[in-house]
Image (cartoon, rainbow, N blue to C red; front, side, top):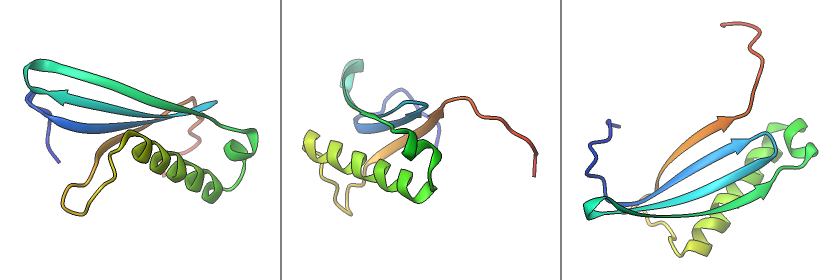
Length: 97
């Protein structure tokens, strides 16, 4: 891992898990600062949000896979996808430990 330099090129994915939607965003960076952004948005059901974590993360994995295939970016072991993940919904922290 390292800090961005501003000279990055290639395909990057951003994953955004919000309170009602999950977004899989594809960003293509090319020389000279040019970029292209495409995304898929998936609705989260109440069952996914309040149910067991296993069901939620299986759903997220399927959304990521479906988007990567739809974008034509099937990964290979020699060229793995680079991605970032964020939770963009409020939560209550009740303890530090």
